[in-house]
Amino acid sequence: MQFFFPRRHRHYKLTLYLMVVEFPITVVILILTGLASHNTYRTLLWQDGADNGFNSAPNAALYAAANYRPFTAPMVWSSFMTNYNLVIGVVSTFMLIVKFPIHCMHLFFPPLGAFIHGAIMVLYIVSARYQAGSDMSDPKHPQPGPPWYIAKSCSVAAHKSNIGYCMQAKSLFAVSVVIIALYFVELVVVVHSCFITKEEREEILDQREEKRIEKEFEEEILKSPSMIPMTPAFMGQGQGMMPRTPGYPPMAATSPVTHGGPLHAPFTPPTPGRTPGFNRLGSINTSSDLPLRDASIMPTTPPMQPQPQTTEPQSGPGSPMYFPPPPKKASKK
Image (cartoon, rainbow, N blue to C red):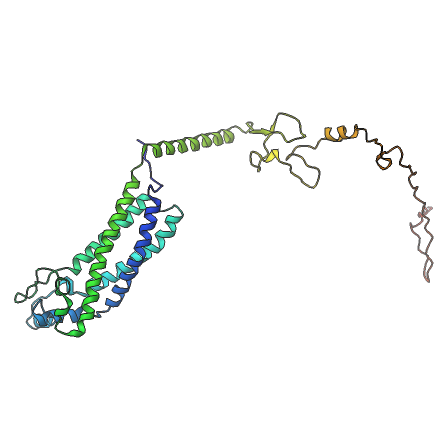
């Protein structure tokens, strides 16, 4: 059974539009997670809920350490959740910057897109689960559901200065849910392109067959040096076929090539003498009624004979110079 790797998006423009919609949402998440990093409001909201009796207090860890009891901070109030949200915000922004140009170059193959969208969607699902986690560490003030800044209105805050922080935390959770839905839509669109249709399968088989034939032809040429591929002869070199010149494409022999001399095919000796076109032009009678066009009326002037040039020896203060120098006499023994 042959394996078919899908390389073409069935909904190319729809995937591109979804990436455009993803951009502002990803930027908002990156801003909100950046503002919440380094414990900007996590402990303040935790203490505000404890003052209202909605959840445990941040100083519960001190009481547990004083009484030699183990204490683990609830995930919803832990520093791990803040750092985790910041990391996935940076990762999702980076993946969007990378996958957009790759998709424009038709290199964002559907299996690759399904893996990336599915992985980021799972990361955001975990993030939303942590943000809406429960707090059962204090038996006197249990919190079985989401924290108060999600389940209740921000106006119930014990300290009015925490209302803005409450709205930021609520917005981060809402945008996380929105981007999960967006990634789910992108995942469905990309997975639909992973299933190849019958027409696409036949097209892939045809391409593989063409490559196989070309490869076999190249192997035959390498195994049989005497088998030289032939190409049509160049105009003026006669009819028929001529050997293909190494280093030239198959149709290079049909175009004029010059190597410092007359036009001829590569590695083909030029035709001596005039071409048939010149012979036909020479046989045409050029006589006419116009005297300037009649070659017989034009006066013929004899060619100028070259005058013999005589060279005289140049005289000077020294020995006389001759050009050309006189022949030397043979020395007598």
